[in-house]
Image (tube, rainbow, N blue to C red):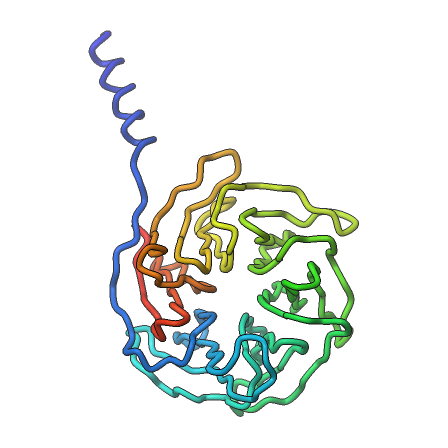
Length: 273
């Protein structure tokens, strides 16, 4: 009986120590001009990739959005061009919302055409975008420390006083924010609470892999599995190699993480095991 109890205890101890890992599947050719963000499109089964191309903080019209197949092959390298250092993206119905320095660009997906540019007053460095199930668009501004809300054509400020906010994720009624190495949850009256800390301060992309469990990238070259009240698990560390891991995309069905490498001009796909 004691032996059985010990074996059961050992089994659960080993299970608790089991580590997730990222298994590389493929990488694109080095033809993507400074890829900053990847958006997995479950509806059309493809990837959108924002390409800064020019300077990351300059209105130079060199930016674009590319379309890739789920095998990493290029569908259209310049699907929509003429943008200004585009970064985060989010889809709602037939429209793609893209942060473009100081404005939100709205692209009609079927027409592959910019149909609207919505300026954000006082914006300096719009970064990530997330879209709620209701179509509310949240946009982070890393320089002003704010998260803005685009709702029914109107821009308001949802959260202020943040330190370098970047990655955003809307899930149900919750809004998650990455800022300076911390994972925050937006709560009532524009306040936030800290869910996790200790990540590289360049926190960038966030996706939910299970209820309350997230995969988080830091631009400098680190990817973590993050859960409240649990030590962060470092899944990938390419900082010594100077390979960036910017704003990730995620296929929740196949558990595939799509990583834009910024200056290395590639997107790399990994399976989360």
